[in-house]
Image (cartoon, rainbow, N blue to C red):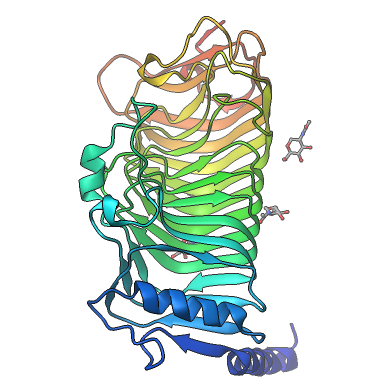
Length: 399
Ligand SMILES: *[C@@H]1O[C@H](CO)[C@@H](O)[C@H](O)[C@H]1NC(C)=O
Ligand SMILES: *[C@@H]1O[C@H](CO)[C@@H](O)[C@H](O)[C@H]1NC(C)=O
Ligand SMILES: *[C@@H]1O[C@H](CO)[C@@H](O)[C@H](O)[C@H]1NC(C)=O
Ligand SMILES: *[C@@H]1O[C@H](CO)[C@@H](O)[C@H](O)[C@H]1NC(C)=O
């Protein structure tokens, strides 16, 4: 790059930023018009400010300044008339008692919005501790619904950056029906003991990316549901948590294919699982999971670091006799290194009705840190291509 361009570029970028900043109309929830005050409930104020910001015909910025604000929850509805920025600088705090939320399964939802930015360095605090104690959804299908901190429903061309979600009562973020949404410098924070608090769950969405982010929680850091296409997860650290998971798939009727998933340059620390694909046996209808690539992953004290489990059946909620009808193909695990807390460090158990196809294992180097026998691996109904994998990890037992 020439010297000239180097000098001109920052000026140009500055002007560009200055011009967008100028064009933005600011709606501050603590302004006299809305009257939000720190340490008090701003449910009405924030809802009103959103309505105005969303109706603005020039780009708008909704600001929640520094401080702690109580918020009962709402749906921020689009479509809006122009790009809209939700700038959370402070802490929005949910009621600890889930019964106080207007919608039991949702704290905050953003619906049908194009060109939304959620940023500002602030925190969505779900105050979930009481709910975790009451949660029995992992074993009770008819359990009481519990609020997800943030739902993104049908959001397009949007970014979520420099934002934290903390102690959600249930999943932290649920991404549904979205297209082209990027998470950058996104933080999820909840203790290891928090139940069902998946970091980011994605379903029926295309073109999502999660980059330079940190997820510490009590369940999957990222879970990828049916209908997810073209997803990149890059430079994410996960742990504590249950790892990064495709699925579970094959539990419900008419699930859409999962394809084009790349999980790259991530570190998992003290997680129950590493990278996995899980599908239920006895699926009610057929499904597919293809073009899934895990690459450059560091595992630090991780249980089941590499796992395909097509007999996923927690709490005996299904019958193992009928094989999974989800077809898994074109899956690679490349350059995965570190330590395993379980001796079975590579487990690929595919469906006996639909064996996995085009599975690749290369440059796998995992060490077992415990004393429950030797490091080993197991492959069932799959014949992976194996390159530069030490013997114990290269399908030591297979069927
Ligand atoms: C994911 O990464 C690939 C390769 O860098 C790129 O072509 C694709 O557009 C990316 N997708 C998203 C959603 O960022
Ligand atoms: C990875 O993400 C972290 C933030 O989570 C950031 O500080 C770091 O610079 C990123 N690393 C690279 C190589 O992009
Ligand atoms: C991620 O990428 C950065 C920069 O290329 C590198 O320094 C780091 O070691 C990578 N991390 C993993 C887990 O591969
Ligand atoms: C496997 O997946 C990659 C990445 O999604 C894709 O580019 C490639 O075409 C797929 N290969 C086959 C044989 O389907």
